[in-house]
Length: 221
Length: 337
Ligand SMILES: Nc1ncnc2c1ncn2[C@@H]1O[C@H](COP(=O)(O)OP(=O)(O)OP(=O)(O)O)[C@@H](O)[C@H]1O
Ligand SMILES: [Mg+2]
Image 1 (cartoon, protein in one colour):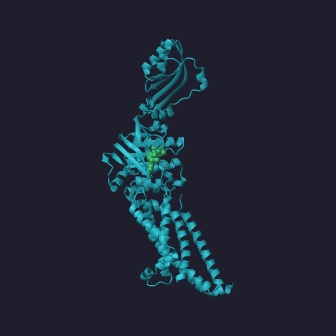
Image 2 (cartoon, rainbow over the protein chains, first blue to last red):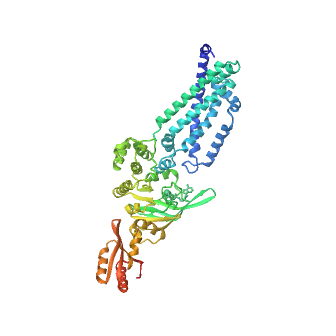
Image 3 (cartoon, rainbow over the protein chains, first blue to last red):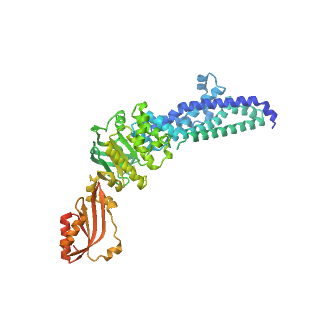
């Protein structure tokens, strides 16, 4: 393994890392935008809660479970027509972001639901007793109370997305995974293989560290 | 003020049907402090939670300030809840918000003008003696302080009713006393009707005007706290009152008793000792006190004395009849009457 070789390929590695960042960033954003409300719906429609609604809970729960039960590699292939329709192409990081987002939404929704479930039921009840509207309870009680836990969940989602994004390399999605396949797998370039692994390890560590820090910072308990 | 009629609350949980509140009727007058006691699982919380419709009653009616609350749409219900404060055993404060924000949230829920919220929060914190804790988080407060915040929150929108679910059960005796004093002050100064649930008779004795005893979802006895303490009718009621009025005479002392052992109870203004000394003067018996206790319930004394009477059995019988006539509350514990 030579350092020169790594330096020589540094622009490629850099490019791949930025692509990974881009894919994870987009799908994380979509997960928050859609997964968060879904997670809230899954929770507040529970039996005995202030927006109890069996049918809604069953339908949303079913869809979430359905998407979650499809292995990512299959999702990647199955979503090719939709990706083509949305992005106009099926290769590159933007295209890969579509499948990643679809996978991240239900994943994050369940995490949000679990985080909300940890909230003391008494606190929710006290808010109902005070005459607050459902929207007020969600905005001013549920989300702030679950914030540290949701941030931890977001970290977990981001890390899973890093792993998934590497898989996107299989269909030419770009990013670190793509690099590893192109050089490490097809050209037997072990240096690149090891380098990508190190980059991924460092990246995941940093994500986890930052997530823990941030979660602790907002925790008032 | 609060009128509960034929209230039933059933829970359908896995295959089982629990009737937590079984046909309860209850009226609480304005400005009253009403206590509901009962053992765990008696249905106290369920009953209380039906009053502000946290639980939808299965049948029956709940009227607060003349407004029927069952069957009222959610939006109307929220308005009604604003006028009913509630405090909880475990305080239930929002841990991610400061004390000030917790109280502010109650004001926000009632659409209290934003500009005036800060002043109102300060006013409430002052009322419960926590002005310096405005920016603290709940985790930084003691249990008693948390309950004070809970009280401040419940009073934010000037409710006419305050519902307390085991409000002092998680507190130590001296903190309990201070919280009870605060509740009493609120009741007297603001004229708020208080309904409180507890399993501690001490609490009822301390601040309630009237009370009800619950068992298996039913109210087995209700009345003024004094009357219930002085003359409990139901078996369970007696069990509860005896937790306050009980006395233990050591076995050794009992063994030494040769004469007749009587228990005499004095209500209110009947000067207990006077009756006994009159009796001792009039009859040829010797009296020997083994126990004496006076409890003040709603500021009226309730006295219990246990004494041994010695002498001629006929005189003793007459003496007991004499006390019976004057107090109506005498019981022979041991020996012949
Ligand atoms: N949400 C619920 N679902 C099913 N059963 C319930 C529910 N809430 C209460 N119960 C049942 O109803 C009965 C009365 O409960 P409740 O909480 O009203 O009693 P309680 O007198 O307040 O008791 P405690 O002193 O323990 O608080 C119990 O048998 C309880 O198991
Ligand atoms: Mg209870």
